[in-house]
Length: 221
Image 1 (cartoon, rainbow, N blue to C red):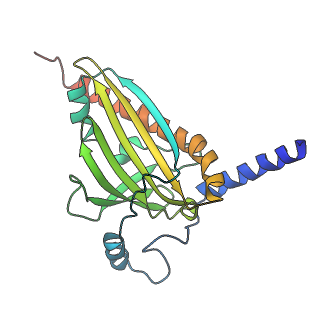
Image 2: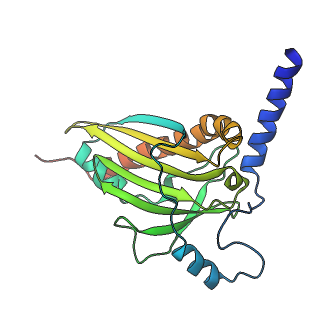
Image 3: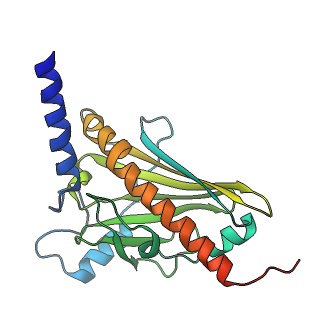
C-alpha cells in the first residue's frame, strides 16, 4: 500500500507539471506550423464554441470574498477591470498579460476574445450571460497549454450578493474533462494549483475595487 501511495504522489506531481508546462497542446484551433496571424484570427473567430452540457461531470473550484464596497459600486468598478490587472498568476500558472479581441467588443453574449498568458500560451473566451450584479458567466476553451489535451472547456461565473455597505463575491470555475482518465489528471490541478490562481485573482480584484472606490472620495447620499 505504501508503494502504491508513493507512486500515486509521483504520478500526481507529474500530472501537475504536464498541465502547466509551456509546450502547446495539439487540440488548439488556429495553432501550428504555417498558420499566419490572420489565419489564426479567422479560425478562432469562426470556430464553434463547445456546447455546455449541464448533465456532464465537471471538476470545480470556488473562491469567495467579502468586499467592503456597496454592491452597486462593486459592479460598476469591477466591470472596468482588465484581466491583466487581476489575473496575476500563481506559482505554476503564468499571469495574464493581455486580451486580444476577436469580435468588435466585449459587452454582450457572443463576444469573444483571446486571452494571452505570460508564457505565450492562449485560450479563447466567450461571454455567455451578463446579468450583473446577479450573474456573469463565460466559457473558456481552445487551451494551447498542455492542459488542453485534458480539458474540453471550462465555464466560469461570478455571482454577487450585498447591500449599500458591502458585497459578497462568489467565483466558480467548472472544468469539463475530455472523458476518462482525463478527470484523474484535472482534479488535483483544478482543486490545487488552479484554486490558488483563482484565490490570487480574487485578492487582486478585491484590492483594486477597494482602492478605486476609496479614490473616488466621500460618498454623498
